[in-house]
Image 1 (cartoon, helix red, strand yellow):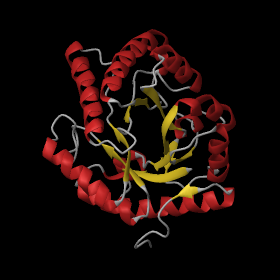
Image 2 (image 1 turned 90 degrees about the horizontal axis):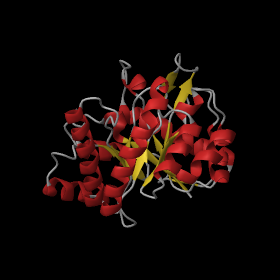
Image 3 (image 1 turned 30 degrees about the horizontal axis):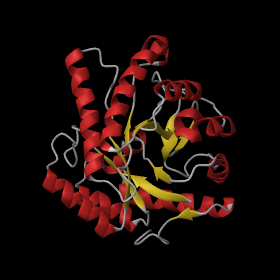
Image 4 (image 1 turned 60 degrees about the horizontal axis):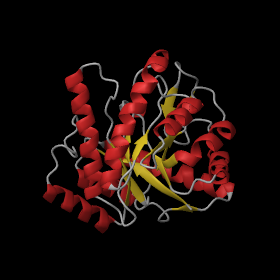
Length: 291
């Protein structure tokens, strides 16, 4: 069954307790947290054992699953010292995921590769080597490292993703399927979903308008994306897991941005689309305090 969750990327500067309460009140069943040195609430390299235990308690008390941890770091950093720190940060993120493990195991740690489409030919073997090394570490923790493809980066097209997955060849290196990046490149879901779902351990979902580089990411329901079709296609391709709403920085820059309002609005869009599609979507009913 598909399960509806919300990413703390939408509010990563807020205290963790407030992030969790927003997601709980909006009636989602899971949350993706963000580990990032730029934001105080959660950093895998600074969070103490006591803070990790308290966070696990907060999630349990809220009845929320931890669907993933977003811990992005550039694996194509040219400075050797900075690259070593980025690799260390990802290993620390995998340790954090292990400490916050769900009953079925650690949530996936989501990260990107970086680079550009123009550097793909020269970067792909470096990425395969570095992701292979990190997959070995993920295996030691019992966890999974999940690549997030991104428009404008070296790993942007579905064909590149399948090559990388096959090259690394590890069950501890999988995919965070954020389809919005393929949509703004003009790719059709009936083409990319069957190709990528076999590797997917988590999904991000938002709305979008236009084609790259003249595209805009939106709150679900603001664009023309057919969520009912997407849910049916995702189910047909065999995906069974979390659908996690992610709110782009493009939306967060709006003067009237309110993560609580956006969380409730996105929730209603997805629940209505699931009803139209006839797809079972686990959530916790009407949003508490929804406008």
